Figure (cartoon, helix red, strand yellow):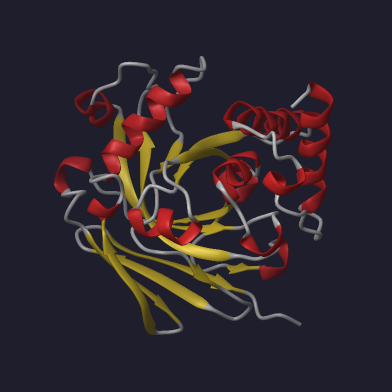
Length: 262
């Protein structure tokens, strides 16, 4: 894919945030590859920064066998989290801000010092964590009908939408990240269950993967940044008026409320 096609694709994805999803990129551009997809993502990141947005962290997606099976992919991906993606817990989130939103529970890391790969170990990753929080990620796709492959979602900033963080930080050494069970409810009904071990065996493995993957590209994870390591359960659709709560053993709860549609 040449530079002009990458730029046009990035522009189309940015325009899609205003309400019109685009056809699957891998159908429109059969030559699209991994390098193209990440460069298309970065073109959008640079434009958002130029428009005044600030990178506040990263997300790792497609880390569980359930999510990979659900979307037909076989490896993780990553995207960027911007300042305007964060919503306070229990505040009404306008569902109209998204095209086709779904939600998933995650154990969020908040870093106390920079983390730069390649070569980051589990011990180094844990030493860089300030605390963990229960989190809900609102995932969204600018690709029509969620008909995505790996390259589609990478180009689309890993299908990022928004983030709701819990308000009770916990030291990472007080939580068994692998065994932390999760119950996801929507409108007081259980819709999914899972555990931290669904995320590459442990969410910290996802943090290591991210630090080493972006580090090879000359990017480091910064102090204060939030890292979403991936979902403990399959994603669940949401509509206006829904109330979604994730309860994690040893971490507590986090709730996302969606404003009723007018």
